[in-house]
Amino acid sequence: MNLKQMVGYKAAEFVKDGMIVGLGTGSTAYYMVEAVGKRVKEEGLQIVGVTTSFRTADHAREWGIPLKDIDDVDHIDVTIDGADEISSEYQGIKGGGAAHLFEKVVANLSDQIIWIVDESKLVEQLGAFPLPVEVVHFGAGQVFRLFEKSGYNPSWRKEEDGERLVTDSGNLIIDLHMGVIEEPKRLATWLDSITGVVEHGLFLDCVDRVIVGSEQGPVVEDVDRG
Image (cartoon, rainbow, N blue to C red; front, side):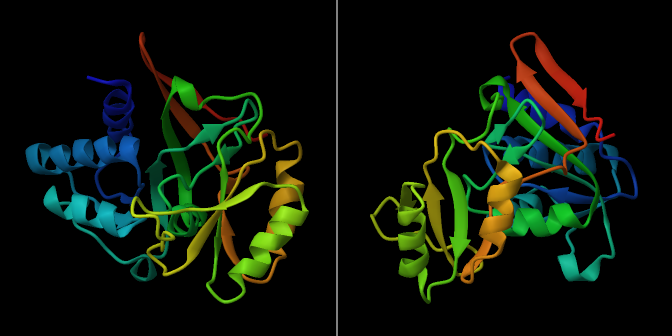
């Protein structure tokens, strides 16, 4: 069992009968969905899933996980998702799978958030992983140039064929190659203020538990937000 599968299966243990569960997107979350699906089939686990991308929805249906649209629930008990970077202060960057808009909508409705990662995703400061910024088509070039002027080394997220990637919401993604993000909260506030920016991949002050895959086994870290 690889590290991603290990933490995905460990995370599924935190899902209980009767829960509404946010199902994340990405290579690690893939195994979590698989593990939850096995529990639904083999144990008769009674849950409802809310997915963060079209591909997660397809995967969940393959495993027989009952799903609801996010607008049809009043809360989510727990959301389990991957992360692209987690700092020593438990701040995160997400969006490598281009699903951070849906992921943040689901996260904001969640009573508890669990991130599942392998050791390589743990960093002292955020920024080595390019920060995704989702933008509308109209005026996207203007936003791109603003990022250039700000020294954030932007690039368009592209498909394998070289065309610009289009998200599940029909938007574009600009990745910011910053190296180190010294003040993530200040950057998040600035990005939130830019017209044309739909959402960004900074997930701050939101995670409650992190499960880290290591060669010695999964390590569960509870986050104290004070």
